[in-house]
Length: 419
Image (cartoon, rainbow, N blue to C red; front, side):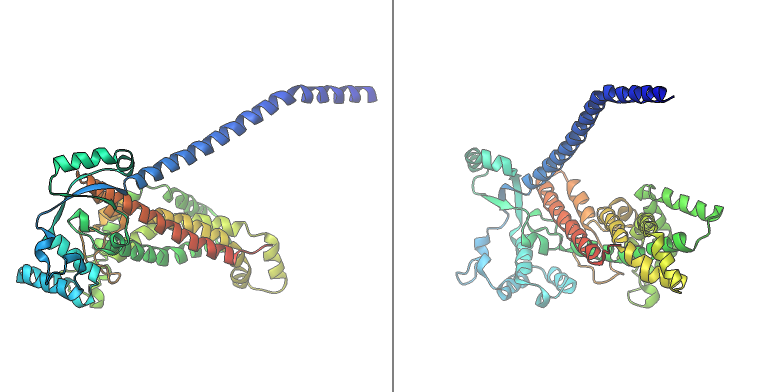
């Protein structure tokens, strides 16, 4: 009997030893595959970032429809004039209707000197972009470009510019590429994301708590869980159609602000920041619910039992023990949801985000645009200079996304607990 067992063990041992080289080869092969996929992903992201940065800098030929020297005052060049001088220049050169329109949009007393100077360049000097070159072309073909511009565009100005500047971030949208900015789009994105989080986060966490801690294990609740999982994969354009039907049309009086008497009821409509935020809230709600459920489910049952053993109620257990330990996972899911919402375009196009607006949003009932909408609108134009602006706006959008994610990660680590 013992001999039979020994022979069986020797056979199994020899079989394992004979398979060991092939298993090691398979392990090394898969390790190489995983390493290669990681390297390819990093290279692809690097190439994407380099391509964006390459379009954010470079030579540009500018043609002024009106020579800036003609607007000099008492020997002071246009670029050196004070805000008051620039306002007086606009008042003298523009028609009364055009000047009053600018004053009604935003009083000149409230505008910065840089903003007034941008209006002067846009309305009076009117720079046209004749031709542009990327950063790589500008660095490797500098002499050739200078010779070409001198012969092809005599009298025009060839300069090396950064499309991504502080003025670009602080200027409102404009019909001229030289003076166009993304301030209005940044405020629109921040307002929209704020309302999205304000709506989706408490509802998502509340639904997850109910489904994990209170809901009975029956067919109805299983159906609800299945549908929530399915909703996480629904195309975003469907949520846009839903938002158009419910928030823009059905709830127009509320989402436009007319119900609260905050806007002119004759011109108000539901295509506002509030509608956009609620639509994106519906979009990310399933993601927050699913990730919050997983986070709550990962809290050890021993903590719940210990709480019950000390006489705590169900709600006290959830509030003081389950939620604090699930917060890191819940915030991780929220980070993923916000990352998806901040880059969405299709739902906002459906509900009526503006593609040309120069007035900053002042509240949830304002008309709006967002950075993804702005980028889409610029890339759709045939002129190359708008694609340079779009690349710069992409850099700003990525910076916003990373900043919001970093803040959420700090909060997650702040509330993290060890069992």
